[in-house]
Length: 418
Image 1 (cartoon, rainbow, N blue to C red):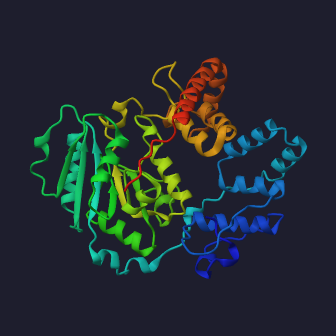
Image 2 (cartoon, rainbow, N blue to C red; image 1 turned 60 degrees about the horizontal axis):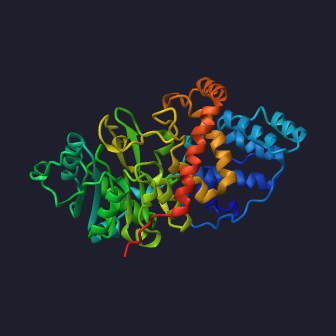
Image 3 (spheres, rainbow, N blue to C red; image 1 turned 180 degrees about the horizontal axis):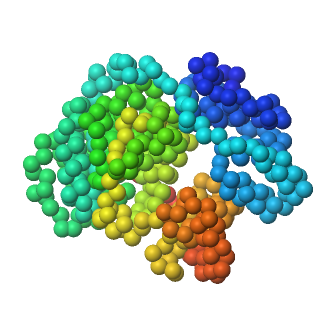
């Protein structure tokens, strides 16, 4: 994923800043490679397969440059708890304390030829299948379907999998769309998406949600992105209603995540990696797990700001009615923390040891409500509270770990698309 610096084109290098404060040349190269990816380099340069060990001060410098100071402290704590040499760790920590954090999205790598690009994919007019699962959100779904009626690109079908109760079939009769309705009695998000994909006739699948608003050129920009970057996945950007696209998402770059609420991909991707894992049913991280399978398969996925959509964040319906909204904050004191699918995901792909370290990082900070996640003082307070109620937190984590173990024993529930 991270390109070798010596193979980067000049058009990318001019947007990078060499840091001579690193002790080793290798660290300088790694830093430039990181910058290239964060600033939106998308190219064919060979990538590093393995990363060599660096001087400890170079590692701390890199962390300080690119992450919040809380994570620098966390790194120091974890390394000390791992019985690393405390003198060396503290020395490297304090030697790099003057390092300033950098924000790489302020100057990104542009793709000026994109605006005038004549897409052969668009010209061929492939059938696009738009997949929308819905649950008790008819007023919001109406806006989405009206937005689809206004699309510049016309060769598409809409597949709605409706799990609402009561089910309102007449709601769909007046829309001017090639609309295929599937009534699903079981409230199950990943079953709904899998069912729609299996019934899709298009060569391109466009995943959407029932509480978003989209621009008239939404389909056009997804298809154009797939073609321009020779990618198989165009990962659209979300932004909250009443706000703008975040600065770090407002340019093309390799996608760091996969969100099923706004993504276009060739149907063949599902044939390569399978459908969504139903072990995540009524829980969280099903889209993240699918995205990781796509990444591990070496499939190129592009973060596409021009195919953005507004996240309305409906206050009713959807996943919250299935019993899970926040991955790390249980509704009841004796419920598992985090929800078992999160632990299942980490243990499946990263192993038990790495999962324990991840829980040590994420569980204490989850004590405080999500709205305080950017408030360092509130997060610190949450960690102190988690120590005070540690027996309860331990019980919650133990429950989650046990339920995740059952999922691992059952194995993935990933159906292949034929």
